Length: 340
Ligand code: PLP
Ligand code: COI
Image (cartoon, rainbow, N blue to C red; front, side):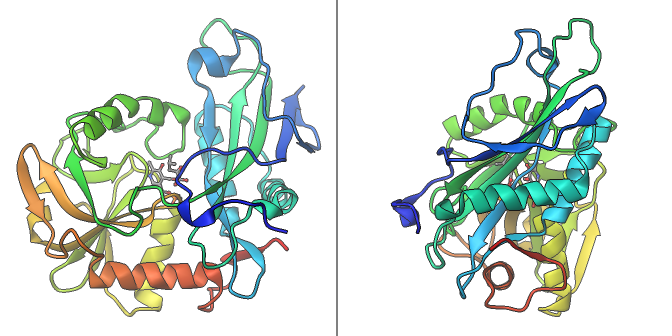
């Protein structure tokens, strides 16, 4: 039976659910892991994660489909990306098949907290790993903990499908040969100053530029960028320093194979934004959030789709992806992992 929650009015915030998955890495091997009802973690004051931020994470969602099944979307790709993050951060990979099994077990244990079909809400699933033993000199931890918690959530941006306003950031997110392409906690730590500053100035998010030349647009703090050209082509920035968004990769496929749109992944210059018809931010948390206005140091770029509703192409993409996730549109082979 569903928990007694006002699903339609949930924001994107943590709320405790009964179970989380916990597995420990010690003496160079992972234990079997188990579900725990304890949401608190006790670690040494000199744990590597606390001193040197040795941590990475993932994000995916579980949904109730139109016919009442509980499913999640492409967890194998989260497992694969977490393995890449771990390799870059000198952390042990949690085996990809066990990652998917652990997601399934955690969602199943918290199934009463998966929002019912039609509420617009979902169960956010947050796998993460950190270095847990005491380290003083700069080096990787020896012991690690892998965990997955869940939290029922609503839209990431207030207003849901309402267009947002973003600004071009003067701060950089990722260095040319840094960690922008993996989901390291440190990428988010360094974005906190910029996001608070953006919010204080009335913007919903920051668009970061490539930090090498500050010529091309990259992504925002928590989502990739989609643009629709005036002749209806879907384009997205190509860069080695952005996170390879699972939502973006899925939408590019949907655009081509379901909607017959022309698609292209290429470098996109900041000065091209004035020529675009539509813009959206895409990610697990954001799904697709339409952008109505981009502020470039006081110069306003107003997308022709406006500030009231999603543009027509972004709307079609959104509806098709949601349909695939919620079971009203047939999904490509392997995209939907049935949980129960
Ligand atoms: N870019 C950043 C910086 C993110 O944090 C996220 C969220 O995971 C994304 C893009 C979107 O990735 P995905 O679609 O895999 O959730
Ligand atoms: C996600 O979309 O899952 C993210 O991780 C973005 C943000 C909440 C950090």
